Amino acid sequence: MERSSTTSILCLHLIVLGIVLVSEVIGVRLIPIGIATVILLPILYAFAMGILLNPNSLKLTKKILTPKAVKMSGVMIAVAIMPFIAKFGTTVGPQMQTIIETGPALVLQEIGNLGTILIAFPVAVLLLKMGREAIGACYSIDREPNLALIADKYGLNSPEGAGAMGVYATGTLIGTFVFAIMPPLIHALGIFDVRALAMSCGIGSGSMLAACSGALVAAIPDQEDTILALAAASNILTYATGLYVGVFVALPLTEWLYRKARPGETRASAA
Image 1 (tube, helix red, strand yellow):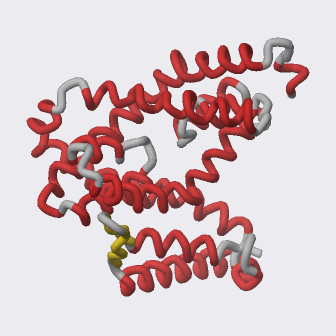
Image 2 (tube, one colour):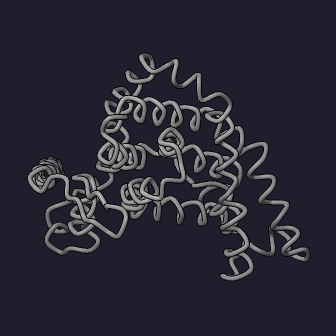
Image 3 (tube, one colour):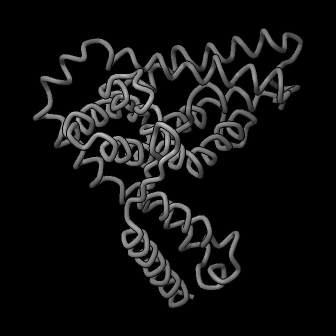
């Protein structure tokens, strides 16, 4: 049994290595769309191939990858992203003056995360008729710190936990694609400053940060240092302040809105 697990883990590493090599061979591709250009990065190809080779969707990989190996791959994502985050951290120091010049914008951008409540919550409750799952799904973008908050307050087996996990899985599956495609398209509109676009990359997700900042650097290569520094600082602040905003503002606000939308419903009856 132990030998089977070891073989499965070895196969997992070989599959990942193959995906990386193929993605790097394909390289960066530019697709003109009207006034803008969609930039396809290797991370997109790797993500797509990873989905296609998922043991839950492909019988061949299901035969060679054990559940233990699949579980380990989820843990390794966090480990693998750490050197990338550390590299981003080294860009913050040399660009500290630029970061300071952004003033309160970098700190106040956390308010933008409340947009998930204003936009998604009415759709979830009024249009899709969701129950208390809407609280976990809409109070934030549901990355790791937000999941931890929901798990601590409600438990992941609760309706709120189901909503949060659903958005987390959806963000993991398609968030990288969206964040890799949006920056060059929005930049082409000529509405936002490059610094604002860079700050928007830091939403508290390592993979989305990589895709967003990478696409933005590809679109504006002469601003690479500024983009990477502001994106990294924004991501760090999101981690630092996002949890407090969730605890004291976002989650209580979403709870209050849900009680207003469903005044006769108790949590026990909803569960």
